[in-house]
Image 1 (spheres, rainbow, N blue to C red):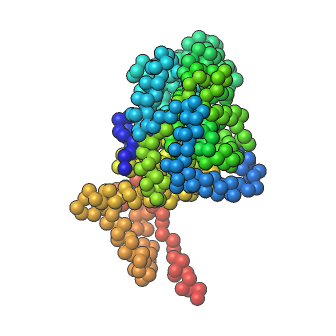
Image 2: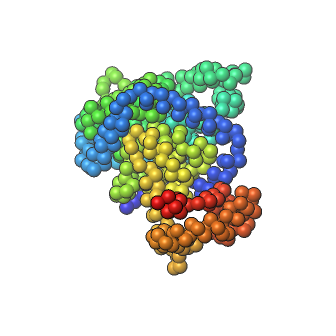
Image 3: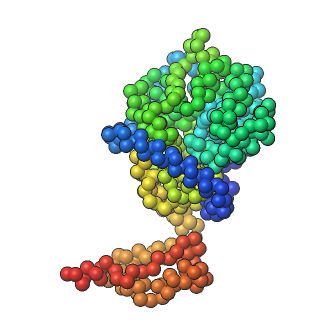
Length: 485
């Protein structure tokens, strides 16, 4: 089954997650920025979710709707194409990122324009559309404030919802002063002043652009309607002012009926920004003379989604509505930030989605970028069991490794020995007593001082490189239970 092709788009990093995370952990400013931002969003989300008494029922309904779409994706996509075409839109099918970039570039070139304004879109970041447009001589202007900060800073997004979460106000002011034409040289780092500077910069772009490019949060199969939710109003400007609108959307973003939006428009704002409802919800269907763009093109993107759908244990990742709630509760993400994941999809959902879109071999370290604490599953509004999926993907990575070795790796041999010991009650009891009385207790004490790293033989030495080896308890539960009976 085809996956996202290498060499195009932003699904693969140049380093493995452990190497990239090590560099991120050495940046204390980054960790402070992340802790402040994710902590604030977590608190807002928890407060507004607690107001909804049937929150769990909403989660279950959302998961059921998404599963229904995934089970009948072909028929819903055909229905969407028919409705969009009936209402004056043009539907294009893109097998992968390269094909999607080619389609969008040709559409823009056909208008004669060499500038486009963009609504924040994960799909266009995934395929590296800005880079493809630039190669064709087309300037793309991000209009979402956080995306604008990332673009002006020649940076990469590090969060699905808040792409510039790794930047503080002072850093943003410095970026504006050095990169934004016509900005007040006395610009302060007050949020209102920064927002006003961005507003003035973007206003002329909105008024002069002939082409806009967007993603979509949802598409309604029964009506052909597209939906975008956002907080700044920039999306509404892009969707209404230009003459041509091009929307790039993953094929999994469907809902069957307009009524289904009732569920997701309650879940998404609370899970993403901690708001009861979105400030701007834009819904459009085809083209209408005298109202909005004269041309509308919808590019339906696969780029590894069909391969993900083929995996029964991994396909639930396609339920994701990009709220980023799982990022904000993840202890790994909070300490490493998004760049360490290498993909435009960071955090727990990125750790299960990116390897499936690219093939696990191209993102083999990401399924291990988790403590498996389960916090991501608890907050997911569409109930994606990310921890179980991570274990499944780890197994696929290990199977691929085993297939490439004639002899078992050290890790595989160790796990096989542990499995053998745990399957026998007497063997496991004996091992616990040996660990308590023997050498491991001594090594545990040494490991806390750093000496244990040198004393433990490989592969155990790598285990204590970044964590303490727990000291065995004085008495196991089994021994305590035997004494009590």
